[in-house]
Structures are given as C-alpha cells and as structure tokens.
Image (tube, rainbow, N blue to C red; front, side, top):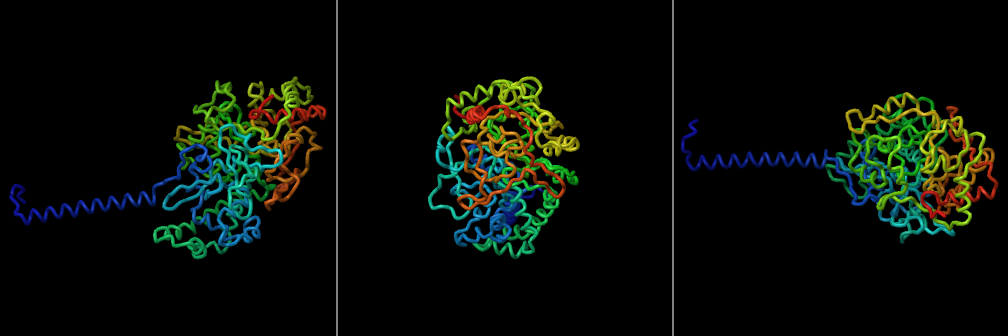
Length: 570
C-alpha cells in the first residue's frame, strides 16, 4: 500500500471509525480487567481512623488465610443452633430479633452497641467480604460494675465503653454494667469452644451449598456474582474446616482450656509446620499487652523464649490466623505504636526504653484499680513489696520487687523450673525442634524470626495492671492474688472461670458460681484435671513466695498490688 496516497473522504472516515472501535475495545478490556481485579482479586480491608477502633476491629491479615466468608459466618448460629454452647437460650430469642451476635456472645466474645462484629473480629474484601480474628480477641476483657466499683477510675484519658450482655436480647438502651478494659486478658472468651463450634458445623451433614445458600439468601438475594462466589466457597470452607479440625484433634487429648486460655505453640507445630502432635500440652493464660516499650529486651512469653517485642507480636498474629504471606504489617504498626511497641527490629539486652516504664500520652493506658484503696494499708504493703525476704527456696535474699519491678535485678529473666516449681507442661511444650522451625518463619522478609530460644523455666514479668490479669500463674490456676500467697495445698482445687464480676478484697474475678446473673454459663477449672493423653497442665503448685508473711502483712501486700503499675500508688 502506498502510504503517500491521498485517501478519499470515505476511506478516511472508515479508518477513523476503526480506530475508535479499537480504542473502545481496549478501554472496555481494561475496564473489565480493572473490575475483575477490584471486585475479585484486590484485598481491601475495613480501615479505622484511630488506633483504638483499629485494635478492636482492624485487620492483621488473617481473614482470607484463616477466616470465613462474612455472610456464611453470620448464618452459622441460625443454621446450626444445636452446636452452640446453650442452644435453648439462643432459640428462646424471638426469631425476628435474633442477630448473629446472639450466638457468638455465648463464646464470651465482647460486643459493643451498634457494632456488627464482636471485638477481635475484622473484615477484608476479596471477591466477597471475609471475617477473621485479630489481636483484640485475646486481649480485651470486661469487668462487671458492682457495689463500690467506679468504672470512671479505670482510665484517665481513654474513653470508656461498655459491653452488651453475654446472652439473650440486647437491651433497648446502651448498658453500663460491663466495662470494657483494653489490652486486658480476654477473661470471658472461650476460643477453643468457638473453634469446636465451627468444626461441628462443618461435620454436620447439612453443611451443603443448598442448605446454607437458603440461610444466606433468606434476607434477600446475593446477586449472580456473589451467589456464584458463595456456591464455590461453601464446599472449600467445609474442607478447610475439616482439615483444621484434623490438625487440632490433639486438643481432645488434653484437659479443656476453657475461657481466657489457649495452647499457643502446639498449633504452630501441627498447622503451620504440618508435623504430628508431639504429645505435649501448652495451655496458658492470655497475657496483658499494655506498656510494651520497657519490655523489649526482656525474656517474653511465659517461658521467656524470645526477647523481641516485634517477633512476639508477629508470632501472636500467626496464632490468630495470619500467615507470613498474608500478615498486614502496615496495619499492625498502628496498633503496635499504640501499645508502645518499639520499632527496633533487634532487641538489645538492656534497652534505654527500660527507663521509660509508663505509657506515653496517646498510648494504651495501664488500667487503674476501680475500687477504693486503703492508702495506709497499701503504704505498708509497699514496704513489704520492696523488703527482702528469706525464702529458703531462693538463692540469696530477695524481694518481690527484685523479680517484678521494672528496676528489679531479675525482672524479665527466666527462673529455672526447679526454683519456681510451677506446672511445667507449658515449658515442655516449647521444644528445641519447635525453636528450629520458628526461626525459619519469614525467610526472605526483613522481619524474619531470629530470637526464639529454648529455656528451662518461666520468666519474671512486671506487674503493671496486675489486678486486671487474674487468674494468676502462667496457666491461670490460682483465682486471686490472696490465694497465691497461700501454700499450694491451701489454694483452691477447683473454681469457675469466665465470670467478670470482681472480688476487690482478694483481687481476682468471682469464681464460686457456675452461671452469671444474665445466664452465661461458666467453665469449671479443675487443678488435677488430666486428659486422655495423660497430660495435666492445670497444676497450681510452686511460686512459694510470701508464704512466710502473717495474715496482716499478706493483706497489706495485696492492697499495694492493687496500685502496682497503674493505680494511684501511695
């Protein structure tokens, strides 16, 4: 073709139209590709403007790797009420007034008025919206407002919010009877029971596309695209839940965890590294997470197996369902900054931050004891706390402060199991083989784990906000501080966990009843419980410090410990 030939008007118009058609097709293809990416492949988490809401409801990257499609998750209680802890209580709620939260509150999850999800649940869209867990599910607790308790004492600057009742219909006006304490161990949450519910649903022969799609679309059609997504997702979710159940089947061989506790490292062994269960029991209490800056460089976790707050945070995120690929470091950083986590990627043995032992302005506060304190008695208790004792089981002469004050010579260090004498099951569950595998996580990433080590005891931890960290010892086997000052043979052999009514005298949650005033059933903790595997883990022995004090001095010491780290110290 002669490129220099002059085209007649008709040819020029045909060429122009062809160019328009080609351009239109390219634009249409790009639009389709963009729409496919945006609505199918792009991961878009729900974000929050402030760190408090982001802590409670923001994403850590667990949704699509360890979560469920949101609409499916919402209908499970209505679809399978018989698998809930208290089916009759759920069915007693009028069908037209039930919400998904009425079912999920039975596991002790904390819910706020006008929030569609429990605290500790996040949403991320990928094709459809998925729901997963975040760090707050294990680190937000409640305390019931009772005689003498002033909830406004808990925080100086942080706005206080209140939880909905644990069971039954939500009241017409926002309640003020269960104060929410941020960063506190989730004293009412029974994560093991929640997972068992999901597994039981997946095992149910009705967990089919037709049955569940009818439940999902009862309130209106999903539309053709989302309907196709859910029809493909339901069988895959069922298969994933059954696989996870098989990976966690060993939990049935150990005593049940109950509320406020979980096995933190055995799931790594069987789910992340795909090894057979090694026969151990690592059940431990949820810890508190406020005031992290001065903890960097201390031996962290109950057994002191890591000195990096960053690695500790990431390992917790993996325990909540994120993976080294899916973990959302950018969004986790907002929360990490709020709890005072240092940015250094390598912990130093004696960080300068240790001198800064209280949170900065705008960070998560240490909750203050919300009952009146006898200042004179607490002043006497402070003297005892810092005085040396002569316990024969300890080398040299030490004080409570030497192990538990931020300036104590042994704070953040591991005490050998022979000296501390507490239940060793959690210690034995973290093996050298697990260390070797833990330190492979993150290969190729700047945050790759390096700091995990095997220890041979339990770590001394600071006591800031101690009143809100009951029950006590690493496995939560002692209900109150006052009980901890008694010889092991006089500590309670069984008690109920999951209550959020507080005992301000003995310092711990009420543990003498099996049901709350609003109908929540509590978990019977038995010190001598042994599972089918022969494992225990609930022992309440050891930590025989302060036993030589007389009754008056024990009372004084407990009064001071109400102020420790976050109270109005005398």
